[in-house]
Every structure is written in C-alpha cells, then in structure tokens.
Image 1 (tube, one colour):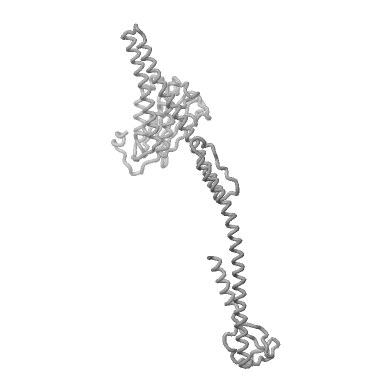
Image 2 (image 1 turned 135 degrees about the horizontal axis):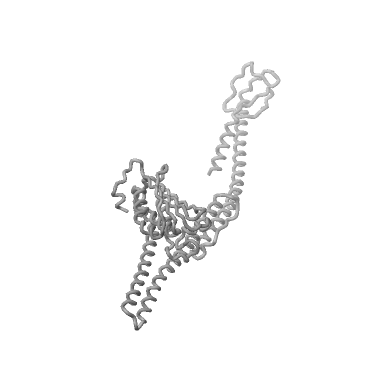
Length: 392
C-alpha cells in the first residue's frame, strides 16, 4: 500500500513539473515540445527567439496541430512513466518479500529457540540456558534476560531444597531423641519413678526444642511474606524492652551492656521489628565470650531509623558473612554449634527485606560483629503512643 501511494505521488509531482508550451521557431516546426493547454496568445514584439530575433505568431491551423501533438506526447510520457513505475514497483515488491522472508526467518528462528527451550525446562533442569548467538539486538537482550531469570530460579530452587533438607534434619533430631528416651525407659524392667521422671523431663525438653524450631520457621515464613499493614513504632522503646528482658541471660554469660538509645521512629510491623531486635541481641549474646560486651544503639539518621548491635566474641571471617544469613547456618560449621537453631540471622534478613530496610554486617578485627539495620522513618508529624508498643 505504501509503495502504491509513493508511485502515485511520484506520478503526480512529475506531471506537475512539466506544464510548459510549444515554442514556435518561425519555420513551421516545434523547436521544443511541451504541453499547450490553449492556443498561444498573440506574442508581442518583445518575444524573441534564442538568437534575439522576433518570433512570429503561428498560424491558427498550425497552432491546433501543435496543441494536439503536445497532448499526445504528454499522454505518451504519462503512460511510459506509469508502466515503468509499475514495473519498478513489482520488482521492489518481489525483492521486499524476499528480504522480509529472510529477516523474518532469522527472527522467528531465534524465537523458536526461546520457545523450545522454555518448554523443555522444568524444575529438574534449570541449569539449561538459551545462550542466544547473534548481534546485540532486542532478541539477544530478551535471551540474556531469560537466562538471568533461569539463574535466579535455579538458585531459589537450590535454596529451597537445602532448606527442606535442613529443616527435616533439625526436626528429626529432637523427634528421634524423644522416641529413643521413651523406648529406653520403657524397656527397663527396673525403671523407678525417678528414672521415669527424668526421662519425661528430657522428652519435654526435646518437645520445647521442636516448638522453638517451628516458631522460628513460622517467623521466617512470615517475614518472607512481607507486610500487610505498616504502622509507626518506636525503635528506641523496642530495643530498650529487649535489653531489659535479656538482663539475666547477659549476667549468666558474664556479658555487659553498652546502650545508647535515642528516639528513632520507624514504620513497618512492630511485632516483626521486635523479633529482629531479639534475634540480633540473642545472636550477640550467644556468640560471645565471658567478660565480653554487647552494644545496642538506636538513632535517627536522615530519613532512616537506625539500629546497631555490636558484640565482642570470636573472630568471624568476612567470607562467612553471606553464609550466616542462610537458614541453618552457624559460625564455623553447619551444625557443630548446637546452642542456636541457625535461623536467627536468616530471620533478621527476611524481616529487614520485608521492611525495605538496609542490613549491613561488618566483622570486627578483634572479634565479633557489628550489625546495622536502617529502617524507613515514619512521617515527621507522626506521633507514636503506647498503643504502637502494645501491639508488639
């Protein structure tokens, strides 16, 4: 359609560009043949030929013949232009169809590769990649983006498999302990009240361990699900409440407090934020040394409410930091340190992500860690009353 329109415009413009008249040379013939839409008017004496001589006016019969000749020649030029234009249009149509077929074949071939690979990929072969060849165009960008998506999905599936395996192991251990304790005491024909009581207390302790694990798993899932409702809360009040609740634990471990709690109004979920503070403080107490210290500070910093928890303790290698934020990972090896569940820092990471907060972990050269969480601040005119803390 566009080619036909272009041909029509060309025909019209060429036709308009040739509106001239016959020029009579005084010898009864036409020196230049052009269109003459009406008989030439009587020429004045100022009209001269190319040599500067006067041009006599043609006779009436000769003028009519010249007009007819001009019209026939113009019609002939129109016909020639139209025929040649149509031939050129046909040739270009065939060439365009051929080029379009070749280009479409190249495009569709790469799209077919993407479609075929996408259909073949499943949860068992997420390692497959498109790796599209060719120039850096939109299709190459699409293929590279698809490969990046597959890489993220593969990492997510691997993390899920590890999580399920670790959770199964952690849950199976206390359950096995419970069953073994019950079987041993029941198989003892001389079991006394004291031995039965002791076995029962140990079974209850294993049950409490399972309860702690399940609660931690539920908190992790809740943090990964995000927040449904955002409310302002006082980070200073939450941190102070957690420090007071852990006084006995710190005394038992011979760990001292260093606190500098300034007002810091954040926004998010107060309950999850308190759990984040609890996990950071518990982690600082658990992985510490006798005579050590834990420092907890809160402050407002620009448009952020900042919580910092630092502690003394064993030296943590910088390359281990990323692993510690994965579920069921502990300092040193995966399961050698049985005092914690290995979920504390992964819960911290999930809650920070749900709050759109920045989480930084820096190992201290002399031992221990410095954890900093920057929560979004509430509006400046927001007032946080006791109700916000009671919802924790």
